[in-house]
Image (tube, rainbow, N blue to C red; front, side, top):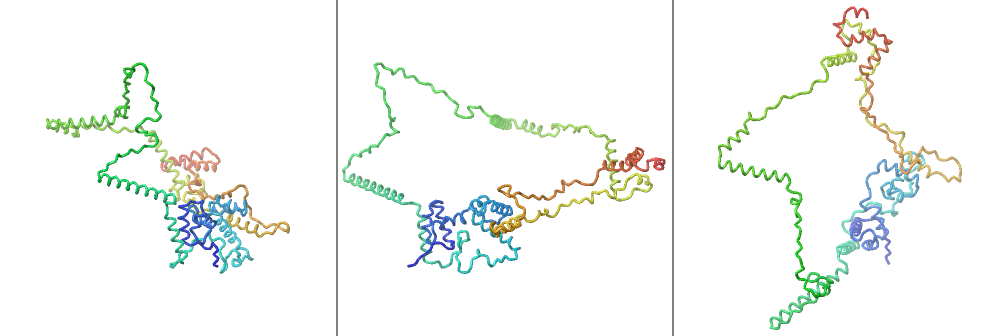
Length: 460
């Protein structure tokens, strides 16, 4: 006797049958769904759907945020993968597999760790204990007879959209139609033989709501004639359209007037063409067009003198910030000005954006994974000894604390090149606030050197 144990690797045909069965029977009738699959039980079908085939399952690469959340929740709720999975947004098997992978990556640094001795690795001949979360095996070109029979039976059952009750109703309807045709044929034969029977009216069961008033009670006739008392009730004429209720719209009135103008112009052109042509020429004459008025701008709010002063200030700042020396015969001005070699210039200010965001202190994911691996390998506290050395961790909330390292914004970085007023401040500080020097400095800045009296320069 052949004993067949249900389970094993899922095949592509079984996945397709399972998806079609879920579409028909829903996600509650797993026993009925598993009856379509010979080698799978109801529990395995349910696990396959919720672990792999459900469209809501996320099968993309794990992000850094998901890894941090997984390690943090595994630290708070160890081995509670069904509780952790909906928070992370993955299935429990995906969470467990990713957790083991992160711990393996953290244990690579350990000298005693050997990946070949991992007990989770399948040896040749071993059966996968969790095949529901693995991809399906492709179908072979030549399928077994059992698989072909299972596929044909599933196709027939899933294609039958009408159950037993629908079949019975269809059979009763067919019998009734055959009975009606037989009675019609019988009446035609009797009529052809000259025997005409009265067509009996079929008595309706219940009330005919189209022909009578249900449960009507007519009042008994009285002693006096009341025929003249029936008065005609006047029905008020309510407006039935929006136009009658609100009146004509202005757009409709303008359109109607426009049509009237067009019709009137056509009549005028038909009876008096020359006057109509003259009127059109008058409208198209450029002399008749209204002349445009002169463009009037508002009065200026800054006078010419103020503009000249602003230009002189800009010229002075260019002299201060320039790389070349001042013109010949300006030694007095050079003596008055301070040394600006140590002042940061506009061209020397670093304005480029850094190529990458500066990294944080170590890899948070690897640190958490190393903590989990050391805690897993630690002995029970009953043995005593030192606790494993762990990296600093966070237990403040359900989700891990975000470590935001922002890229510096060059626009918000303050420039170190001083303005003209800060230049004045530096000069006055270097000259110990002597009024005479400040006066000479302002004269040098605001006036060209050729116009300064020579005795002023000698005094300087």
